[in-house]
Image 1 (cartoon, rainbow, N blue to C red):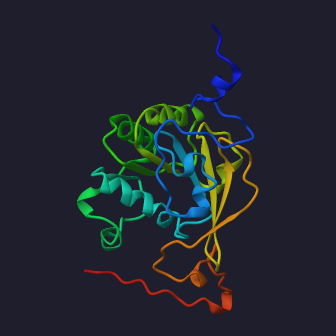
Image 2 (tube, rainbow, N blue to C red; image 1 turned 120 degrees about the vertical axis):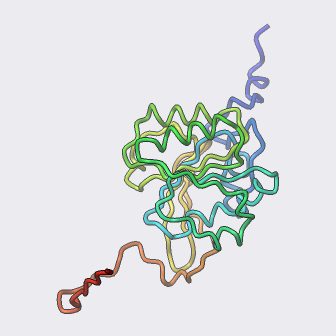
Image 3 (cartoon, rainbow, N blue to C red; image 1 turned 180 degrees about the vertical axis):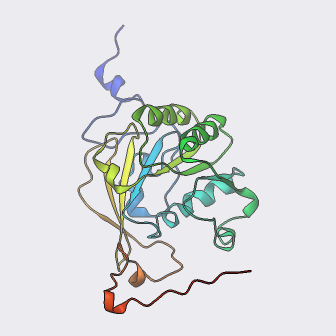
Length: 233
């Protein structure tokens, strides 16, 4: 017998556009109550790609994930960084959780997606943070989403802000901006009604927000000083 409409709507793989979706897997609390209130399932989804599009580096795009990463480590699951844009600062990471639980994967641009896919498919990591190349095909993104599905891993993909207008199979996409008041987060794609408000989060930062700039300061010709080249022999 065909199921009644009410029974169909109770399925976890069905969601209505006027309400937030219910996740098949347990979500991981973000550590920010106002963020969890806007995320389907009440937290970061396991087994699904989450795209983070920061306007610039260093504005707190990693710090906003730390509460969830600590929970993964508490479950004795390591955290993997794939192709980070700079050297991982060991003392900073050690302040959050044991370095033995941190994996750093160096990968060439053409190998980043492949490395992420293997990590997600293994199901052996609590979270993957990957800095994807600016030019990545939807086919590669779909492969990553398929690799994540059915797993308990968190999958955070960092992409340039210019990718906001491009389509993506990721069910959750957020843009991040820095300000003197905190980290501004816009959820522009989620399984549910549009999120029309900007979230302002107070994240952990080694530097005060007043020193966050979206662009480097401009230097006039009169301010320029000759540079000395030092040659070590």
